Length: 330
Image (cartoon, rainbow, N blue to C red):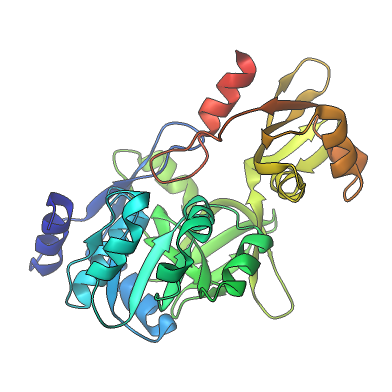
């Protein structure tokens, strides 16, 4: 076992352990230190196993320093196995084989799943479930996985909820989800964090009456499934119009010449904020505007397109928004 796995194994076995502290991704600014009691982590582990219908052997494909990787380690240890570490993308088949017999599980971010569907669907099909989280999931990606015989479950959660607490839109047992008057997603239940380390004022802002007030906008459909519409700060107010950046990015990813896309708002003297698309592929600004305008209001269309060889990512696979905005400034 590596050092992180050993430390978590000792933490789970301790009689009265201190809370575990993990950092948020920092995708929108400075990371926050999230204090997780062991009871919250174990509540998440148990609820996940009940929803999946099995415990088994886990492949650790994400950094254990982030909550998704931490949960993989804890699920595996609770099931009685040390996780197998994925050293690099090219070693996926060998790492999968090293898991041995029994039900296999792995947590991935969309970028990882996309790459593995290109290179190793044979190994992917051997997994009982692929948990997919860490960002918006394009329906086309799930369709590709299903067509390849890969069982994917989309997860929603954060470090503050001890990881994924909503599977395919439905909260895990014991988890409560509600939508506030402002459209903000709220989460309650036994998996919640205790607060932000050294930041009591910030803790008081988001832990209110037993609810964690997330940074995400969402709605509940007629079946009670959560639909996440994007971060509250992903709504770009430009020229008096509210533009949901995730919806624009999703539309751009549907273009046949686009391999990846992200959309952000950046300050603009004329518009207040302007919608900027960061695109991996051959797509000019005029074509991008026409493509978005064919599906959504023309006012949602990006006013600037930045061509990239690849979307910059953080260590956990999420887009690095700070780096993207710095490119516009440059």
